[in-house]
Length: 256
Ligand SMILES: [Ca+2]
Ligand SMILES: [Ca+2]
Image (cartoon, rainbow, N blue to C red):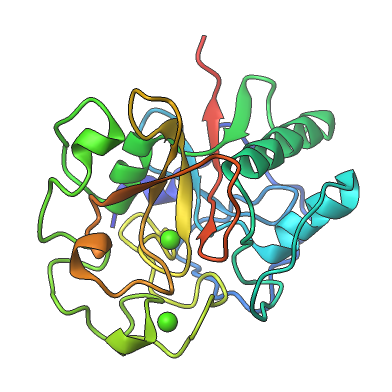
């Protein structure tokens, strides 16, 4: 367990004394000090550079609030989801816009400092969050799949029961499609669903063509060993929306 887990979040102001509503179908971990934003998202600091990762994927309830507030369009998922499931049918562009909206909202409300913003994690930040050692390669494509035999749950293959929400054929969980965030064990940083449930948009282009964005982590439909490596990446057009890609926010200082 990283000792950084207990550090207070730099960008977020201390919580008011009133209780913050906690999603009912998520599992709380009281070892983690609560650092909660205005939507109830919880954040932990990974490293000393002040970047805070949301411990959960952005949930249906979070994204629905954004849709209500802004009137942006949001297609229904192609399967049944609860409010605590990860939001799907969100493109990279949608995810970026959500982060901008949350930044503006919380600056206005005085929840975050003007020096901070919400955004998607970079490819290398996501690597650090999933517990990868230093990777070689200048682009996500060059780094993809290079570190073998390391998965979000450890080094075991096939994955043990409870490793995460992956395809039913692997027989490691009880969910056909998405699952509520936070029902599987968190990783050493206190982050949930890094490997399974839905794949996650990251900030970077996949390569220097600047056409596709990089996506990290496997999802509820994946069972193939190479696609489950922590170092695996894939690439998707930034405007495409599907039922197996969602996103996780980070709160980070804006570079000077
Ligand atoms: Ca599953
Ligand atoms: Ca994931």
